[in-house]
Length: 141
Image (cartoon, rainbow, N blue to C red; front, side):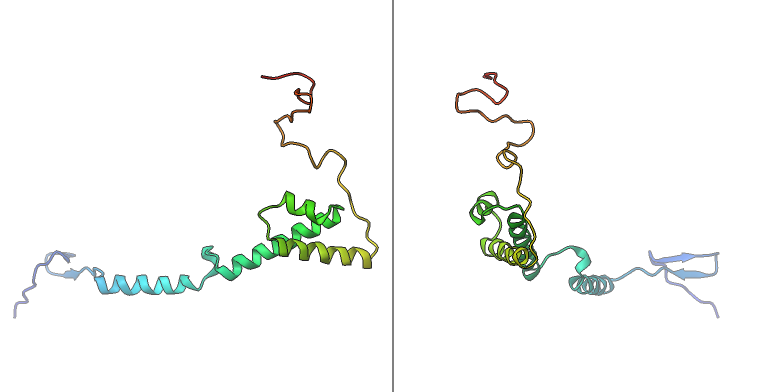
């Protein structure tokens, strides 16, 4: 008996008598793979997608760290609020208060910033003095 092979675009031959059917993925297979990969990565933290509770916890921790640093630098809470306007005020205050109680309990001495360093402009810029000149004494136009 002679075998007749149907010729498709997916049929290849090793030699003239042995056909090989090439497996092409169907849409169903691709869809199933994409859905399963999406489901697996949806629960994965390695993707870098930050959820709302994670974002809030990070902002809270940053605010507490800012408040603690301000208290250790012997800065007032108002000064801390002014220098960090985007930080959540409640978290900054909680950090400042925690550091204050810690410093009092353990008799830790604060590390004040040197005078003039707090109000210094960013590097490369000169601040104008009240006389209209710059700090280096020259007038710039």
